[in-house]
Length: 323
Image (tube, rainbow, N blue to C red):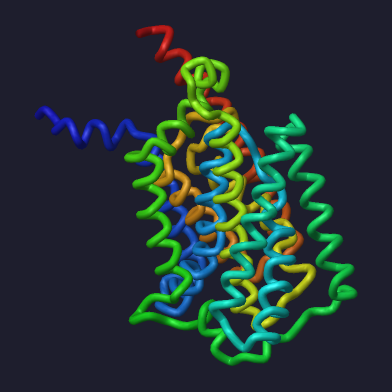
């Protein structure tokens, strides 16, 4: 019996493999611990995934350009501190949010200018920015957390709208928005074209450097939003917040099919990768596995993600040669 075309496309798509891996992981963990499939735990998983997803959307766009941003974890810490400080001064959650987004935009702008104007490799530029932001967070607070004085602030990170946590709804709304941007706007086409071949894109008249700066700014603002939500969950600004967060985001989106060389991957695949990594972390916690092994698991996932990225490129090259 001949299968429908859409079913063939689904079975041969990379997302199908990711979905199967995700379902199998969920089945294994639910077999090992019955707590996994409880409503409360599923909400916790989605809440944790939403933080990675919000910053991950920006990371997807940056990596699609063929760049990288290692500063998102340190940005979370500094943005959280500034947001809580502004909140305590103004008694306004809205003002604190605007301050957080403005700070994120400035960080992204600096990263973009370092890459486009100073011609510094994005890996080195954002690695330096990561150290600067973390150091600034530590110095400005003397390594002491700042407690939020407004009760409403905690609702952003811990509250619900109907049955779903507010951060999950924010992540879903951003997913819809940026899926449209990547697949149905000029900016999205520019991102894929530049990531595929920056030289050809420049010769075609595309504003390559301007696009790179714009995407770094967007990525900075999304990382800042995740930092704002994290500070809300903690009800404080903490200088050690976001430690290792950049590795989680990068590993998740690469696992989801975003190529490190740029120009290849989808936002949907990245979201599945984020869910896989979040469920794995949650399962290790439920099974009372030592946090030291969490680091080992994340390291294995990063290596696996890079390995899969290489295999995907080889497979794509073979298909192109055959055609």
